[in-house]
Image 1 (cartoon, rainbow, N blue to C red):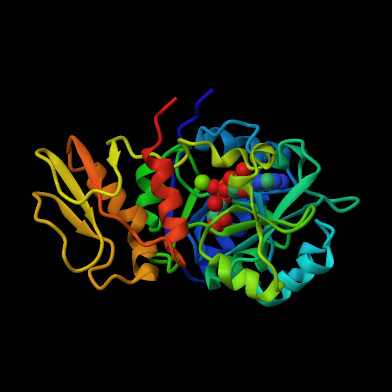
Image 2 (cartoon, rainbow, N blue to C red):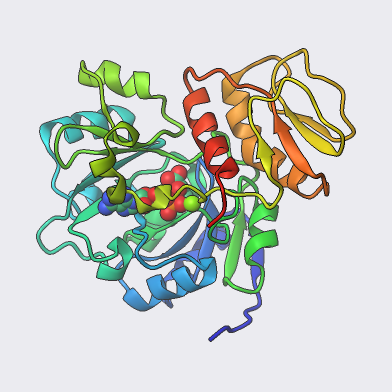
Length: 323
Ligand code: TXA
Ligand code: MG
Protein backbone atom coordinates (compact mmCIF):
# COMPACT_ATOMS: atom_id res chain seq x y z
CA UNK A 1 0.00 0.00 0.00
CA UNK A 2 1.36 3.44 -0.80
CA UNK A 3 -0.45 6.59 0.19
CA UNK A 4 0.59 10.03 -1.09
CA UNK A 5 0.68 12.61 1.68
CA UNK A 6 1.04 16.35 1.43
CA UNK A 7 4.39 17.01 3.11
CA UNK A 8 4.48 20.33 4.99
CA UNK A 9 7.79 22.18 5.29
CA UNK A 10 8.09 24.60 8.24
CA UNK A 11 11.07 26.64 9.42
CA UNK A 12 12.14 25.79 12.93
CA UNK A 13 10.27 27.95 15.45
CA UNK A 14 7.81 27.41 18.32
CA UNK A 15 4.84 26.99 16.01
CA UNK A 16 6.70 24.31 14.04
CA UNK A 17 7.69 22.44 17.22
CA UNK A 18 4.09 22.45 18.46
CA UNK A 19 2.83 21.28 15.06
CA UNK A 20 5.46 18.52 14.99
CA UNK A 21 4.54 17.29 18.48
CA UNK A 22 0.90 17.08 17.35
CA UNK A 23 1.83 15.13 14.22
CA UNK A 24 3.85 12.66 16.33
CA UNK A 25 0.92 12.36 18.77
CA UNK A 26 -1.35 11.46 15.86
CA UNK A 27 1.04 8.68 14.80
CA UNK A 28 2.53 10.73 11.96
CA UNK A 29 6.07 11.18 10.65
CA UNK A 30 8.22 14.29 11.17
CA UNK A 31 11.70 14.92 9.78
CA UNK A 32 13.78 17.13 12.08
CA UNK A 33 17.40 18.25 12.37
CA UNK A 34 19.82 16.76 14.88
CA UNK A 35 23.48 17.75 15.18
CA UNK A 36 24.48 14.69 13.09
CA UNK A 37 21.97 14.27 10.23
CA UNK A 38 18.23 14.86 9.79
CA UNK A 39 16.16 12.18 11.51
CA UNK A 40 12.75 10.84 10.49
CA UNK A 41 10.82 10.74 13.74
CA UNK A 42 7.88 8.63 14.86
CA UNK A 43 6.33 7.92 18.28
CA UNK A 44 8.55 5.09 19.53
CA UNK A 45 5.79 3.70 21.74
CA UNK A 46 3.35 3.19 18.90
CA UNK A 47 3.93 0.22 16.61
CA UNK A 48 1.72 1.59 13.84
CA UNK A 49 3.68 4.83 13.69
CA UNK A 50 6.93 2.85 13.57
CA UNK A 51 5.52 0.66 10.78
CA UNK A 52 4.66 3.77 8.75
CA UNK A 53 8.19 4.96 9.26
CA UNK A 54 9.73 1.74 7.91
CA UNK A 55 7.34 1.96 4.95
CA UNK A 56 8.20 5.59 4.20
CA UNK A 57 11.92 4.76 4.26
CA UNK A 58 11.56 1.49 2.39
CA UNK A 59 13.71 0.00 5.17
CA UNK A 60 13.85 -3.74 5.88
CA UNK A 61 12.00 -4.42 9.12
CA UNK A 62 14.77 -6.32 10.82
CA UNK A 63 16.77 -3.14 11.07
CA UNK A 64 16.31 -1.73 14.60
CA UNK A 65 15.98 2.01 15.25
CA UNK A 66 17.52 4.47 17.70
CA UNK A 67 15.20 5.84 20.42
CA UNK A 68 15.83 9.55 20.98
CA UNK A 69 15.05 11.15 24.33
CA UNK A 70 15.46 14.66 25.78
CA UNK A 71 17.86 13.75 28.59
CA UNK A 72 19.64 10.92 30.37
CA UNK A 73 16.86 10.67 32.97
CA UNK A 74 14.33 9.84 30.25
CA UNK A 75 16.75 7.19 28.94
CA UNK A 76 16.64 5.36 32.28
CA UNK A 77 13.04 4.37 31.57
CA UNK A 78 14.14 2.63 28.36
CA UNK A 79 17.40 0.88 29.16
CA UNK A 80 19.64 -0.57 31.87
CA UNK A 81 22.93 1.27 32.18
CA UNK A 82 26.17 -0.48 33.17
CA UNK A 83 28.71 1.64 35.09
CA UNK A 84 30.64 2.30 31.88
CA UNK A 85 27.43 3.22 30.03
CA UNK A 86 26.63 5.73 32.81
CA UNK A 87 30.12 7.18 32.50
CA UNK A 88 29.81 7.63 28.71
CA UNK A 89 26.29 9.07 28.95
CA UNK A 90 27.45 11.49 31.67
CA UNK A 91 30.33 12.80 29.58
CA UNK A 92 28.95 12.71 26.03
CA UNK A 93 25.19 13.36 26.27
CA UNK A 94 23.74 15.37 24.74
CA UNK A 95 25.84 14.55 21.70
CA UNK A 96 26.61 12.26 18.74
CA UNK A 97 26.88 9.03 20.78
CA UNK A 98 24.33 6.20 20.65
CA UNK A 99 24.47 3.52 23.35
CA UNK A 100 23.16 -0.01 22.79
CA UNK A 101 21.92 -1.33 26.13
CA UNK A 102 19.69 -4.06 27.58
CA UNK A 103 16.04 -2.99 27.44
CA UNK A 104 14.64 -1.89 30.80
CA UNK A 105 11.81 -3.81 32.44
CA UNK A 106 8.58 -2.21 31.17
CA UNK A 107 10.37 -0.32 28.38
CA UNK A 108 7.53 1.45 26.51
CA UNK A 109 9.23 1.31 23.10
CA UNK A 110 7.33 -0.74 20.52
CA UNK A 111 8.81 -4.14 19.74
CA UNK A 112 8.83 -3.30 16.04
CA UNK A 113 11.16 -0.36 16.71
CA UNK A 114 13.81 -2.64 18.15
CA UNK A 115 13.12 -5.33 15.54
CA UNK A 116 12.23 -7.76 18.28
CA UNK A 117 15.67 -7.91 19.91
CA UNK A 118 16.05 -7.35 23.66
CA UNK A 119 18.58 -4.57 23.44
CA UNK A 120 17.83 -0.97 22.55
CA UNK A 121 19.83 1.85 20.98
CA UNK A 122 19.37 5.17 22.82
CA UNK A 123 20.62 8.68 22.16
CA UNK A 124 20.19 12.23 23.51
CA UNK A 125 20.78 14.57 20.56
CA UNK A 126 22.53 17.93 20.92
CA UNK A 127 20.44 20.22 18.73
CA UNK A 128 17.98 22.87 19.95
CA UNK A 129 15.22 21.81 17.53
CA UNK A 130 15.56 18.11 18.38
CA UNK A 131 15.65 18.88 22.13
CA UNK A 132 12.62 21.19 22.00
CA UNK A 133 10.66 18.63 20.01
CA UNK A 134 11.55 15.77 22.38
CA UNK A 135 10.57 17.89 25.38
CA UNK A 136 7.31 19.06 23.78
CA UNK A 137 6.37 15.51 22.77
CA UNK A 138 7.36 13.93 26.08
CA UNK A 139 7.79 10.39 24.78
CA UNK A 140 10.74 8.66 23.08
CA UNK A 141 11.02 9.25 19.33
CA UNK A 142 12.58 6.69 17.01
CA UNK A 143 14.48 8.41 14.25
CA UNK A 144 16.56 6.79 11.55
CA UNK A 145 18.28 9.11 9.11
CA UNK A 146 15.56 10.79 7.02
CA UNK A 147 16.49 9.28 3.65
CA UNK A 148 15.10 6.40 1.66
CA UNK A 149 16.79 3.19 2.72
CA UNK A 150 20.13 2.76 0.94
CA UNK A 151 20.48 6.43 -0.02
CA UNK A 152 22.96 8.82 1.59
CA UNK A 153 21.94 10.47 4.85
CA UNK A 154 20.40 13.97 4.65
CA UNK A 155 22.16 16.99 6.14
CA UNK A 156 19.64 19.61 4.96
CA UNK A 157 15.84 19.85 4.80
CA UNK A 158 16.15 19.93 0.99
CA UNK A 159 17.85 16.52 1.02
CA UNK A 160 14.96 15.16 3.09
CA UNK A 161 12.46 16.62 0.66
CA UNK A 162 14.22 15.11 -2.34
CA UNK A 163 13.94 11.64 -0.79
CA UNK A 164 10.70 11.67 1.19
CA UNK A 165 8.35 14.32 -0.27
CA UNK A 166 4.83 12.89 -0.34
CA UNK A 167 5.76 10.05 2.04
CA UNK A 168 5.92 11.91 5.36
CA UNK A 169 3.77 14.54 7.10
CA UNK A 170 6.16 17.32 8.07
CA UNK A 171 9.74 18.52 7.66
CA UNK A 172 11.18 21.04 10.12
CA UNK A 173 13.88 23.09 8.42
CA UNK A 174 16.62 23.97 10.89
CA UNK A 175 19.38 24.58 8.33
CA UNK A 176 22.37 22.36 7.59
CA UNK A 177 23.45 19.95 10.34
CA UNK A 178 26.82 20.68 11.95
CA UNK A 179 28.40 17.23 12.40
CA UNK A 180 27.30 15.76 9.07
CA UNK A 181 27.78 12.04 9.81
CA UNK A 182 25.62 9.83 12.02
CA UNK A 183 26.26 9.21 15.69
CA UNK A 184 28.96 6.82 16.87
CA UNK A 185 27.30 3.62 18.15
CA UNK A 186 28.79 1.84 21.16
CA UNK A 187 27.30 -1.36 22.52
CA UNK A 188 27.48 -1.63 26.31
CA UNK A 189 25.81 -5.07 26.42
CA UNK A 190 29.20 -6.47 27.43
CA UNK A 191 32.64 -4.90 27.18
CA UNK A 192 32.09 -1.60 25.30
CA UNK A 193 32.18 -2.33 21.56
CA UNK A 194 32.26 0.09 18.64
CA UNK A 195 29.40 -0.91 16.30
CA UNK A 196 29.54 2.13 14.03
CA UNK A 197 32.17 4.87 13.82
CA UNK A 198 30.50 8.28 13.66
CA UNK A 199 30.46 11.89 14.76
CA UNK A 200 32.14 11.25 18.11
CA UNK A 201 35.75 10.13 17.51
CA UNK A 202 36.72 6.76 18.97
CA UNK A 203 39.74 8.27 20.81
CA UNK A 204 37.52 10.58 22.82
CA UNK A 205 35.50 7.58 24.05
CA UNK A 206 38.58 5.50 24.80
CA UNK A 207 40.15 8.35 26.79
CA UNK A 208 37.08 8.51 29.04
CA UNK A 209 36.88 4.72 29.45
CA UNK A 210 40.63 4.44 30.01
CA UNK A 211 40.85 1.42 27.68
CA UNK A 212 40.30 0.59 23.99
CA UNK A 213 36.89 -0.25 22.57
CA UNK A 214 36.36 -3.65 20.98
CA UNK A 215 35.87 -3.07 17.25
CA UNK A 216 32.80 -4.90 15.90
CA UNK A 217 34.14 -5.08 12.34
CA UNK A 218 37.16 -6.99 13.65
CA UNK A 219 34.89 -9.39 15.55
CA UNK A 220 32.53 -10.94 12.96
CA UNK A 221 30.39 -12.58 15.63
CA UNK A 222 29.22 -9.06 16.57
CA UNK A 223 28.29 -8.08 13.03
CA UNK A 224 24.66 -9.26 13.06
CA UNK A 225 24.09 -6.98 16.07
CA UNK A 226 24.23 -3.96 13.77
CA UNK A 227 22.26 -5.02 10.72
CA UNK A 228 22.22 -1.39 9.58
CA UNK A 229 25.88 -1.86 8.81
CA UNK A 230 24.93 -3.87 5.71
CA UNK A 231 27.69 -3.34 3.16
CA UNK A 232 25.56 -1.32 0.74
CA UNK A 233 23.74 0.87 3.28
CA UNK A 234 25.18 4.20 2.18
CA UNK A 235 25.04 4.00 -1.57
CA UNK A 236 24.85 6.68 -4.25
CA UNK A 237 23.79 5.44 -7.72
CA UNK A 238 27.13 6.31 -9.34
CA UNK A 239 29.97 3.85 -8.64
CA UNK A 240 32.76 5.12 -6.39
CA UNK A 241 36.49 4.62 -6.98
CA UNK A 242 38.28 5.08 -3.67
CA UNK A 243 41.82 6.32 -2.92
CA UNK A 244 42.06 7.81 -6.40
CA UNK A 245 45.30 9.64 -7.21
CA UNK A 246 44.00 10.87 -10.57
CA UNK A 247 40.74 11.44 -12.47
CA UNK A 248 39.91 9.23 -15.45
CA UNK A 249 37.80 10.32 -18.47
CA UNK A 250 34.13 10.71 -17.55
CA UNK A 251 34.72 10.66 -13.80
CA UNK A 252 33.64 13.26 -11.26
CA UNK A 253 35.99 14.00 -8.36
CA UNK A 254 35.35 14.08 -4.63
CA UNK A 255 38.46 15.91 -3.50
CA UNK A 256 40.14 16.45 -0.15
CA UNK A 257 42.94 18.87 0.66
CA UNK A 258 44.77 21.54 -1.30
CA UNK A 259 46.31 19.67 -4.26
CA UNK A 260 43.27 18.22 -6.03
CA UNK A 261 43.65 17.21 -9.70
CA UNK A 262 41.46 19.06 -12.23
CA UNK A 263 38.14 17.54 -13.42
CA UNK A 264 34.88 18.68 -15.04
CA UNK A 265 32.92 18.00 -11.83
CA UNK A 266 34.89 18.53 -8.62
CA UNK A 267 33.67 19.08 -5.09
CA UNK A 268 36.18 19.39 -2.29
CA UNK A 269 35.28 17.98 1.14
CA UNK A 270 37.77 20.37 2.72
CA UNK A 271 40.35 22.34 0.72
CA UNK A 272 42.25 22.99 3.97
CA UNK A 273 42.27 19.28 4.90
CA UNK A 274 39.99 19.70 7.94
CA UNK A 275 38.26 16.37 8.77
CA UNK A 276 35.44 18.03 10.72
CA UNK A 277 34.60 20.20 7.71
CA UNK A 278 34.92 17.12 5.46
CA UNK A 279 32.44 15.14 7.56
CA UNK A 280 29.95 18.00 7.45
CA UNK A 281 30.20 18.12 3.62
CA UNK A 282 30.35 14.37 2.95
CA UNK A 283 26.75 13.44 2.21
CA UNK A 284 25.77 16.66 0.41
CA UNK A 285 28.86 16.49 -1.84
CA UNK A 286 28.20 12.80 -2.59
CA UNK A 287 24.62 13.62 -3.50
CA UNK A 288 25.62 16.53 -5.73
CA UNK A 289 28.26 14.46 -7.56
CA UNK A 290 25.83 11.56 -7.86
CA UNK A 291 23.52 13.94 -9.77
CA UNK A 292 26.29 15.03 -12.16
CA UNK A 293 25.78 12.03 -14.47
CA UNK A 294 29.42 10.96 -14.28
CA UNK A 295 30.59 7.41 -15.12
CA UNK A 296 32.08 7.12 -11.65
CA UNK A 297 33.09 9.28 -8.72
CA UNK A 298 36.81 9.23 -8.00
CA UNK A 299 37.45 9.83 -4.31
CA UNK A 300 40.80 11.13 -3.09
CA UNK A 301 42.37 9.39 -0.06
CA UNK A 302 41.14 10.67 3.31
CA UNK A 303 43.35 10.28 6.41
CA UNK A 304 41.93 7.63 8.75
CA UNK A 305 42.42 9.64 11.96
CA UNK A 306 39.67 11.29 14.07
CA UNK A 307 36.49 11.78 12.01
CA UNK A 308 38.34 10.31 9.02
CA UNK A 309 37.49 6.86 10.35
CA UNK A 310 33.73 7.54 10.04
CA UNK A 311 34.17 9.22 6.66
CA UNK A 312 36.15 6.26 5.29
CA UNK A 313 33.62 3.83 6.77
CA UNK A 314 30.78 5.61 4.90
CA UNK A 315 32.80 5.79 1.69
CA UNK A 316 33.67 2.08 1.86
CA UNK A 317 29.98 1.23 2.26
CA UNK A 318 29.04 3.58 -0.56
CA UNK A 319 31.61 1.86 -2.78
CA UNK A 320 30.64 -1.71 -1.83
CA UNK A 321 29.11 -3.95 -4.54
CA UNK A 322 25.29 -3.67 -4.69
CA UNK A 323 23.23 -6.75 -3.81
O1 TXA B 1 23.05 10.22 14.10
C1 TXA B 1 22.23 9.29 14.13
O2 TXA B 1 22.41 8.28 14.82
C2 TXA B 1 20.96 9.45 13.29
C3 TXA B 1 20.17 10.64 13.86
C4 TXA B 1 18.87 10.86 13.17
O3 TXA B 1 20.00 10.47 15.25
N1 TXA B 1 20.19 8.26 13.26
C5 TXA B 1 20.61 7.15 12.59
O4 TXA B 1 19.71 6.10 12.64
O5 TXA B 1 21.67 7.09 12.00
P1 TXA B 1 19.77 4.87 11.62
O6 TXA B 1 18.48 4.14 11.84
O7 TXA B 1 20.01 5.36 10.23
O8 TXA B 1 20.93 3.99 12.15
C6 TXA B 1 20.75 3.26 13.35
C7 TXA B 1 21.75 2.18 13.47
C8 TXA B 1 21.50 1.02 12.51
O9 TXA B 1 22.75 0.63 11.97
C9 TXA B 1 20.93 -0.06 13.41
O10 TXA B 1 21.18 -1.35 12.93
C10 TXA B 1 21.66 0.22 14.71
O11 TXA B 1 21.66 1.63 14.79
N2 TXA B 1 20.95 -0.30 15.87
C11 TXA B 1 19.76 0.10 16.36
N3 TXA B 1 19.41 -0.63 17.41
C12 TXA B 1 20.40 -1.52 17.62
C13 TXA B 1 20.64 -2.56 18.57
N4 TXA B 1 19.76 -2.84 19.53
N5 TXA B 1 21.77 -3.26 18.48
C14 TXA B 1 22.68 -2.98 17.51
N6 TXA B 1 22.52 -2.01 16.59
C15 TXA B 1 21.40 -1.30 16.63
MG1 MG C 1 20.59 5.59 8.07
